Length: 572
Image (tube, rainbow, N blue to C red):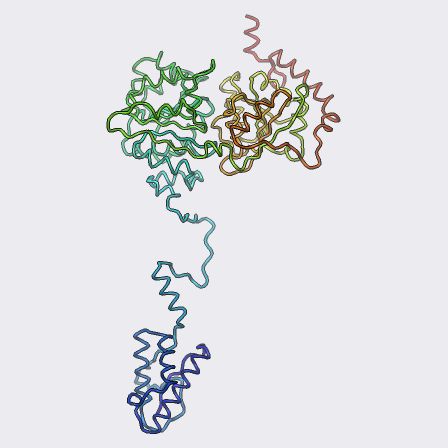
């Protein structure tokens, strides 16, 4: 009796033919009374054996092949072949595995994947949940790999900061090692996170009073850093205070005397406290571990009447010597004054200053920023500005208009308000409370247009800004870089349009040489700006311009109310 378990019907035709050929050979050997094992192997049998070895090389298959040979060596008359052996009621079924259960190509693929460490892929993988963040292939692009603690990584994730930027990836590990650092990176690249996160981690390891002092050139930037510090350090009880001009000095002195952990200040106001508030108030500054100069090129600039360098030097004089603290300088434009820190003499055994420059020269302007220029006559700049803001492409964009003087910004604020634009202003002549309120209105989109001086050119991060207009061209090309950096931040797209008069050609050429890119001529399909100005703006803007000049001369607020403080000063 011949017992044989046939292969599965899913086995390919080639393997089935080889098995049938072998069975016929065994039958012929069985009829002649010869044993399968003692008889010589025919060429067809050798071929089938070779084919079987290719199909499967496992031990189980060898045992199954031997079992098949024992059952087929019997000399009894052959009966009808069955697909499975008979099983009695008292006997458990003896299931014989097929020699062809696993195709060789699948096994070979599995062996190759196992050798190279590739995880097996399911045949029907489940879709990945939308809330899951796929880890990048490069381990260096994660905050965990930079050495940050889990609570800091989670705080950054809560702020939608999940991958480090180039400046963060290069500077954070060095700051955690205790190195002094000069960090240069273009605007919108995350420099605040780059210097603040290592400070928080070091503070969490050894909390102490007035652990860090962060100096910034403008009040608005100091306020923005203060808000970011509070957000990132929210899981811990880190106490930060804001010391800027325009606020009550007595309350600031009380806050300094209470030994906060982080002080965010402008140099002028902190220098005032060092001179006038007494040793009991500022004695905590003698134990500072970190000193950060944000927008260091502006803080260390020695030229001009508005130089902050004397105040910065007075602040640094009240802090520990450089050998007892970490000094961090961050800016978008590295100047010789900034690089001077690298050449300062170092204490024996102290590591040299780490310099990290990322996209500061060749790519000072974000690649997603489109730079354009618009030629306008000097006598009709306001007319062109009004019509430019009303073109179909710009009618809904959030925009910042930069001026060189506070008087120009104040005048444009009145004029654009009279022309029914949703506008607010930000410049140094405004009271601090009004500056904060106006910036808050612009951030909340209550105002579509912000007219500002270079006070708003540094550090402010307002993601909704899509357009920057240089109503006046800056004299310093680096100021242009900071202005246009208010848009196209963090990979977003943005436009920068510069109004060019007949005397501004040299300034434009200097800017193009500094940024390494030429400005394109502004154009919009279906829009002839000159025609629109002549047709719609000459009379209207001329009338509103006279009203705006009258309001400015009479010291009226936007909306027609008189400024009480100004009126009192005039009466005196």
